[in-house]
Amino acid sequence: MAELCLLANMNISPETVNALNEKGIDIVRVSQILPVTSSDREILDLARREDRIVVTQDLDFSALLALGGFNRPSLITLRMTVSDPEAVTRKLLDLLPELKDSLAKGCAVSVDDFSYRVRWLPIR
Image (cartoon, rainbow, N blue to C red; front, side, top):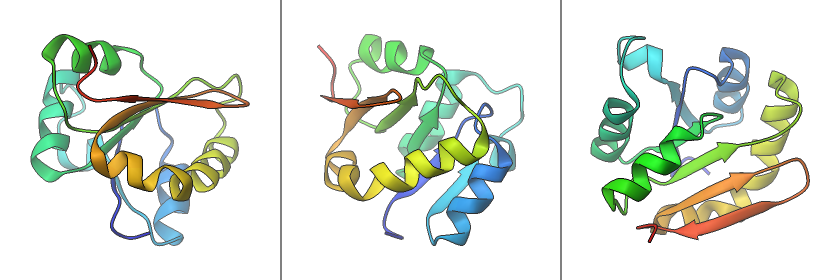
């Protein structure tokens, strides 16, 4: 699954990032490549330039993608009731293989405890 390149927003634990890297997934935290004061727009711009999928718990990214009419980057928004690193890691490891093709085409995925919803980009 190394062809998926992820960019974890600051609300995604370093433990999750490390665990996914150990499983061969290319994921970096925003703080590794941008100042921690970077805006959501700057994070989306970086993800678009580097063809990375944004992983976040912040709902603002969906709104920015919709308002901007962007078809990239793909986005995974985690809306789970439990957000400890182990639960987030497990959820991502379960979903990434299933969502790989959709994410490659450009989509926004909203994930809750029991299901997920895929919306194709650009969001209209």
